Length: 209
Picture 1 (cartoon, rainbow, N blue to C red):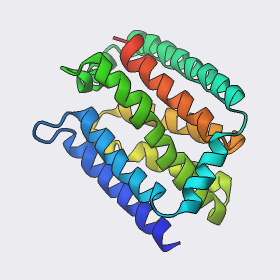
Picture 2: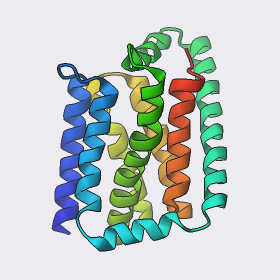
Picture 3: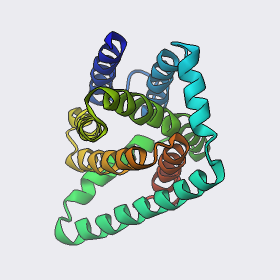
């Protein structure tokens, strides 16, 4: 219980600081994000053998089915964002500038490095931290529905320091989507595939702008 509370506060604090500064020295946004998540993963996975064993057993459950569903949900979420972008262009053209600001995070970053970080560290890392650990552990204490809603709210609110309303909204939508997926399926593999592929779709393969 003490570790869960301490870890939760640490995640909230460091993510708030991260999104406030976004860039420190020669470290770009994606390197900082990957480093931050790696730090959290070390705290979770090296805490005890039981945590690692539980995670591994969850990943092994119906891997082909879960990976396939992860691909479908990633593509579905991408389509939602694509349609949302088209609506924003028609109803709120000024919002396009906020979307450009989001894509400025990938300026001067090679697509191969971005692909590797998103696929193998950032996507999986976020799902392990936010859904596997925080949502699941708090769900054991306060109920899965309450945990889903609270973690989703925090997941979006830590983006507040960016001052980008569309980024905050996007985080809220993604938090709802992946939080609900995990709540309903309890499959880390499904969430990792869905999150990682969506990241690659939206930032590497088919950027909105």
